[in-house]
Length: 222
Ligand code: C5P
Image 1 (cartoon, rainbow, N blue to C red):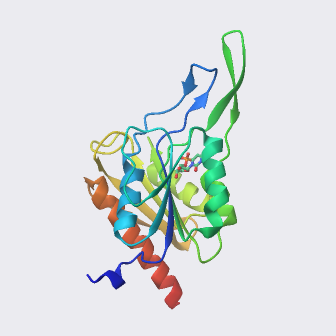
Image 2: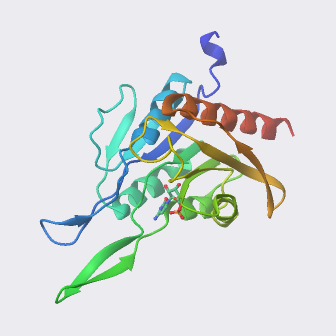
């Protein structure tokens, strides 16, 4: 299509990606299996759809995408700082990072003392203006639709993309994903639910972004 019709043209998109690392001493840290592939695919596709893209990235082994403003972070609190400082200038925010829920605060003997990290997505949901669009991700191992519904509502998202870690072709290091996409429905306990079949993370990223753009266009018409 002609350049002027790019669905995200003129929009600022913020993506979070990758794991966080929570240091427990100068040598060791707590982290998770996230490779950043989903978030990087979202950033690249958003760029190709015409957006100005900021990518808040935890430590990953991927190359920085061209034409994207990459902000490297280490801890959940670093990522929180990037998102909170940029959020008001953002039209669409997609949080694909696997943020550590806890960080070490001390040690007594061999016991590790932990405290909770800020929930960045929940913060964004609380501070979202009506003209802003917020999409979260969720990895579940059971009761996917019930848990994803709770996150969609509880974190005030416009879209929640959930996948089951146990489904073949879904999850961390794969190049594909199998997702269920929830958007607010008639009532809070009955969101609209779409089950998308297995596809590459690039195709999935594009489809998510095109759907978010369509939801925004819909909202403007109403
Ligand atoms: O509740 P749960 O961690 O499953 O929610 C996952 C979603 O919340 C993802 O979009 C993730 O990026 C986001 N999240 C966050 N900050 C946290 C924990 C999760 O932004 N501390």
